Image (cartoon, rainbow, N blue to C red; front, side, top):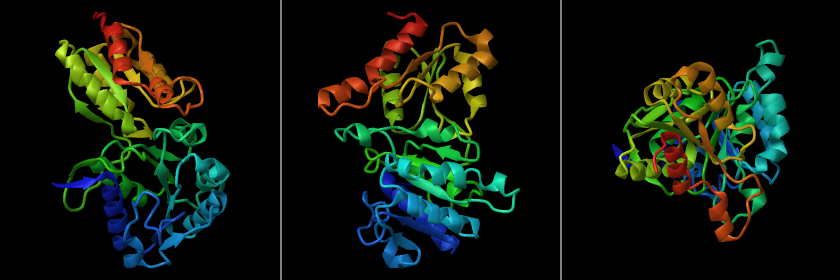
Length: 326
């Protein structure tokens, strides 16, 4: 094992795949000369040159469309959005071109490509730069959606995403790029669609994904001090969702709390709540609880940001509610 920052794990994954496959290239704003807005692509221009590390204008719709066209003709683009907030400018190309191309062409044209970049809140960035659109993309047939929570998963899942023959949405976080973690040496891939049970427990299942897994894990530590054993599951992939792993956990613990950095209406926690009651209703000893952001645009003031985001106390309160602990 070696220790890498989250950004370094992403870079290592892209470097390895670009050395392995000459059809892979990276395109986006400031990815080349500036080494990436978050230094994820640092040094890649020097190794691969301007034909494979391509700086673009501030025109997400344009370079996303170029990426789709390149993928249709046999290349494997990695399209970096400086933030997924800006992907809304390009969402027509993602949803109506990349996701539907294989189906609309009767299997004649695919879109083997990755759209990647940061998602969610990163502090005082205001309402237009702090949104989680994970569930928006996960609602789209034809896309796969990955939201890793640590450097090892970031590398293993990004390599799998680059090799996948479907378009993949790969969502990161500005607040994770400096996180450090152990990453396996050598060739290392994680299968898309397999959740990770990061902590075993017997009293309640806590499910989450992405950077807010930090909150889930910290809450589980605090709950253990009160004698509550929480099983913690990192979904890692939210399309496809590994329902089986979550269902088996709930059959063991009989209770579930879902933690998600997203508005409450129509999100991944809503979907999981439905699937658990559909497939494990007889095992539930309490109603499923969801912990989400507040149902407003993100405020700017630090105190309001703190109140808006799900936190450790929110999770602990939800767990104690379903376990009837005081």
